[in-house]
Length: 167
Image (cartoon, rainbow, N blue to C red; front, side):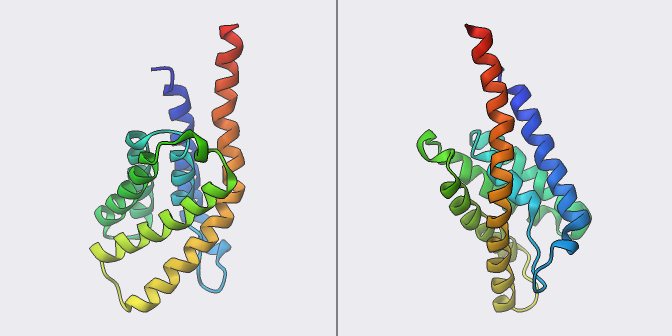
């Protein structure tokens, strides 16, 4: 029950970056490939919580992305939900709060989400989609380097307040 404020902050963070990705993602394009800030925020936020809330963040990310960009909202929502649930299921405090692991999990999670989306809703050439998914995963790693300290600060601020109240 004490995690509710943290979870609300993480959900708002994911929602804001999902909307920013949809609204301004075309300005972040590099060689025709754009990062998915909403998915990156959901994956990074999931590192600081468990699989259940990770699935909620993935579903939120999929709905936001699908509402603006695609007619296949269900495929986007399911792919993002499964990936964030998987990231949250790797519940080990030792690796969750490091930059390296955040980057690795973001790369693998982003690529897996795009491949799951392609499997459920194929479009065009598989090889071209594979290249775009790999490029997007690479850009998401760069975004994770920027988002990870923000999320860690959101989570730790609440933990430090609780610790000071307990003393």
